[in-house]
Image (tube, rainbow, N blue to C red; front, side, top):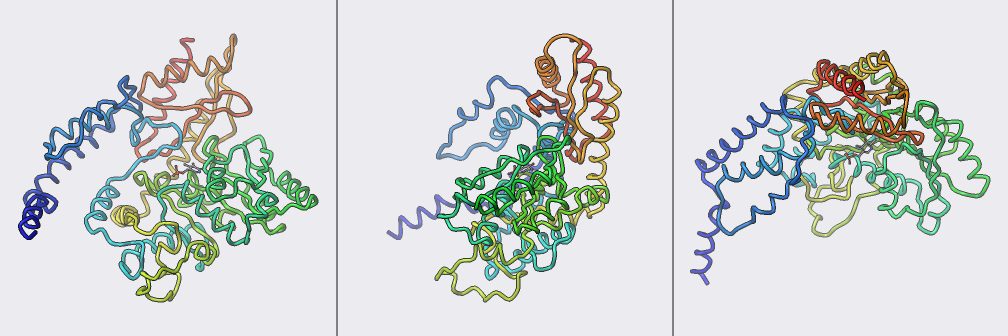
Amino acid sequence: MNGRIDTLAKLSQPLEPSLSKRQEWTEVITTHAQKFLESLAHTRAFQPSPSEGKGIFDSALRDEPQDPQQLLKVLAKHVEGPGVKLGTPGFLAFIPISTVYPAALGDYLGAVINPFVGNFFASPGAVRLEHLLTRWMAQVVGYPNNSAGDLTSGGSIANLSAVVAAREAHGLKSKNYAKAVVYITSQTHHSITKALRIAGLGDCPQRLIRLDAAYRMRPDDLERRIRADKRSGLNPWLIVASAGSTDAGAVDPLEAIREVAHRYRLWLHVDGAYGAMFVLCETGKTILAGMEQSDSLTLDPHKGLFMPCGSGAVLVREGRHLLNAYRYQASYMQDRASLASLAEVSPSELSPELTRPFRGLRLWLSLKLLGLQPFRAALEEKLLLARYFYQKIREVDGVELGPPPDLSVVTFRWRPKRGNDDAYNQRLLKTVQKDGRVFLTSTRLNGRFWLRLAVLCATTHREHIDLALEILKRNAKRY
Ligand SMILES: *Cc1c(COP(=O)(O)O)cnc(C)c1O
């Protein structure tokens, strides 16, 4: 047996590379990464590819090590190549995601240090670092000191976490779900209804509250529906408002909705996955007024703080509700210290996860290395760029405009003199996407096909908005 153990130790030696080996790989990978970053400014925002990355299947996993240069070639061709290019300045589709460089270094370092961040006892400093970030978010939003938060993998999980906290805070029992009414709108992100289903709340009646002309929830209709439901013996318990809807970028009237929630004792969750971080600039703060009055809030640093995919956050106004939803007893955790304060609560008692990546470091390193000021400036710039686009496209003949942008999404469509509107706009969009220098998408609002432009990529500046205008105008003329 001893002989076998020694042989196995030798065979597994590559798992513990020497300093020079580590340096060699790091050099190869970072050289590749820098080349990739340099190319982004000139890369098309959308790269159609007939093979759609299928070639990755031809590079099988083997027992033997493979050459890093070869692997990077495979990666470049089949993974980096096809599809949309997050982080390119012409990316004006969906909600743009981009990433600042220190975040990548934070991920690298976080994986190297690899603290056990699920548990305070195991990694008190790492846990405090994450609490510092959720505290900071709570503070910029205007949440009180006794709020609690968790860094999630994204907005969908943050929404799920908030829904579960709300369910527990309202003491809902499954036998009553069919009477427990939820209030949303047609603009609510699909991750909310998905979260309800995952949380076992799929039987809760869902009311779609009417929208105003700017696609915002109407508080008068909300109140009317809640009263009607109460009269019929139902139990209204949850309102989900949007602080920036994904489709139209609309911010629901949060103050008025909060008043209704308060009057009838409903939990108000605000989905700010797209919009909440705009609170960092003064203009955004004014637009988002009332957000601080919600019971829970979703934020997505991988949208509004330019983090790589995998950075969301949930905040709960009264922190104990998050703790009540997720705390646990486990005998193998008996050595953990007793809870001194919310700042020392283990993330695993504020979320469904135990072992998880050190999500905070990418954000901490970025905010520290760069300072907050450039983030504030970038967010205000994106708000202004959307307004700039709105003004410019308004001057174009034959264009119909959606509402003025609340945040950084603009909806618009051409109204051709002849032929079918929707077909015309669909054709126009296809042509713009084929050109590839900018990437826009569309949506359906009130049963019509609308083009939409969303500004949130860190590298998008005025010249890229001008380019989008030019490409749209030139192609629109051709039809
Ligand atoms: C993006 C988004 C989500 C989902 O967040 P993920 O991070 O993609 O999981 C939820 N709500 C809104 C409003 C969003 O824009």
